[in-house]
Length: 78
Length: 120
Image (cartoon, rainbow over all chains, first blue to last red):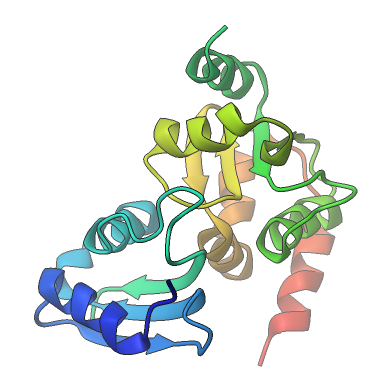
């Protein structure tokens, strides 16, 4: 079942309560998200994006994952 | 040989490996196509592994890297990233540095051209 931008944002918000979060896309299956969070400071991109994927709690797992693609931008605040 | 052993062997025996949907000459997904396109354009010699040809590999590579999406790029056995990361690293020049540091040959002029084309 496709996800709404709101659902994705809520999931991300649970793991990154103070982050600046922007979720885009409209088909609910191929979406994009930008997460700017202090916890990313000092981490490389792989570590940052792994944290985001972990926050999505398996929504992207396997052939039955609700989200097929999530274009990610992650960074620490300037 | 198990999928995990097969993956380990592939990334250990080849300097640059791209696990992708489709092949470098016939990608079957926009994200795979984008990364393969960058490597092709930069003249990098790399091995392409088509995960669509093997269901065990398709899941196996996600378990191997603990990363949920494909494509996945490996340099000298190390997972570098997926499509978004490779795109960012290409544009920032970090990918050039990573290739240079690992003795991987690439066309610097072509890399510069990609950056020029994407400059705002």
